[in-house]
Image (cartoon, rainbow, N blue to C red; front, side, top):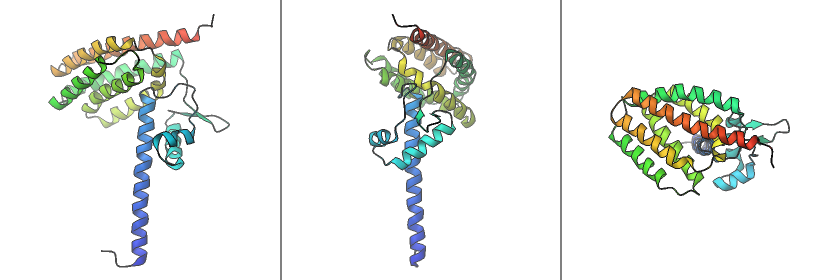
Length: 233
C-alpha cells in the first residue's frame, strides 16, 4: 500500500523506468535479429528517424539500441558520427565461417542430448515453410533460416555458447542480403539432414550435417562476394 505522495511518485518513476527499459530491450532485440537475418545491406546507413518510424517507436530506444550494437561491433560508427552496417571481406568471412563450424557444430551435438519432441516439431515446421518459399522470398528465407538454426542452438542449453554464436551472426548477417534465392532447395536438403540427426540423437551426425550446411552455404556466399568485386563490363 502506498501511503505517501513521495512514495507514490517514486513508485511511478520506477514503473516508467521498467517500461522504458523493456521498450529499449525490445527495439534492441528486433534490430539485432534483423541484422543477423540479413535485414540490412552492408554499407547501409542506419538512420534513426527512419528506423523509429518503421518500428513505431520514438528516437530514444532506437538511439539506445544503435549504441549497444556499435559496442558489439554489429554496427560501425564513422568519424562523422554516421552509423553504418559494416561490410565484410572474403578473408573475414572465411575466418568467421571456420569459427562458426567449430561452435555451431558443438551446439548441434549438444542439442542432441536436450532437444525434445516440441523442438523437433518446430524444426520440421520451419523446414516446411522454407521449402514452400518462392524464388522472390529472399528476406523470408533468411529470417526462417536464422530461426531454424537458433532453435537448435538454444536447445544446446549453453548460454555462453549461444551468446558467442549470436555475436558471429551479427558480423555475418548482412552478407545474407546479397545472396540469391537459389540457396532455398540446397538449404532445405541440408536442414533435413540436421533434423534426421537430431531426431536420432546422433551427435556425430548432427555435427557433420551442420558443418556441411555451413560449408555449402558459405561457398555460395563467397562466390557472390567474388562476383561483386569483379569490375563492371
